[in-house]
Length: 326
Image 1 (tube, rainbow, N blue to C red):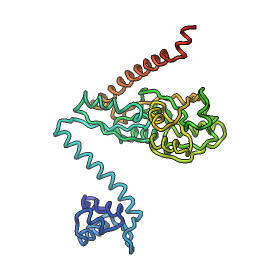
Image 2: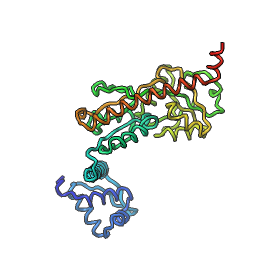
Image 3: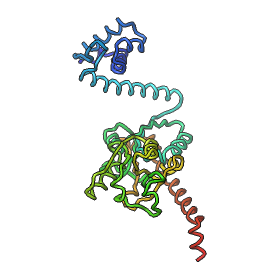
Image 4: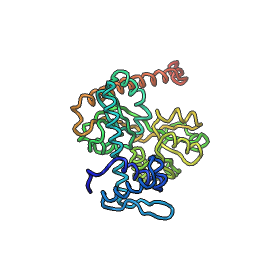
């Protein structure tokens, strides 16, 4: 394959063909005449040295070589787009971009206000945020595909020298009419193993914890549906399709809005640590160090404030007042 002959217009055309399944539609999207688009596609196939599409009466079907081109072509265009943004930002005064990969747990519970504060105090550094499951965050850190990562403790990561970023607590999420919702005391997840579960996608640390807990009991985990977001999980639970386990801080506002109940779990694994680490070879980068130090310090302040607020709520509760009067 002669990469020197590869041009971006033809690459974008091939991606449009794969997306639409039609050369005519792809040509229209690219503002090309049909004849010119056909010629470009043939030249691209000659450059690659393999057919990218199978032609049939209803349009185009991507070949194995075409799938490879689409996968790498999308990545290439994304990198070029990032290059364009970073050069533009340099002209506008942003001196650095820091790529931050984070698990859903950290994004939903902690990061938005921290990143907003960082943007105000360090306008010269732009944070490029990407949400991934925990295993993907750790892989991205090792492979240098991100500068910083936040993930749930679990996967082997000692080589990354992570530090504690935050703590969270997992709770059982139920419809208010569910039999388990009548329990006022914390519940063991063992008591919920006979229930249909709405889970997160494969690779999520939360799902791995639940699978491990089921294996310890020698029982199957009855995962009925898997989705990517906490919000989607709650909608499915509210529809009566199953129960779930989610981080308390992230789910309580959703639960209140959707008429759901949260119950604490007695299991040790329900108390988790979220870790912060720099990517391979990124520890000495000044912008990475600045963001890492900010997140670590801000998360400690947030944890202290949350602990104080929790203590104040307990002191104001009727039970606490009754105990104080005894």
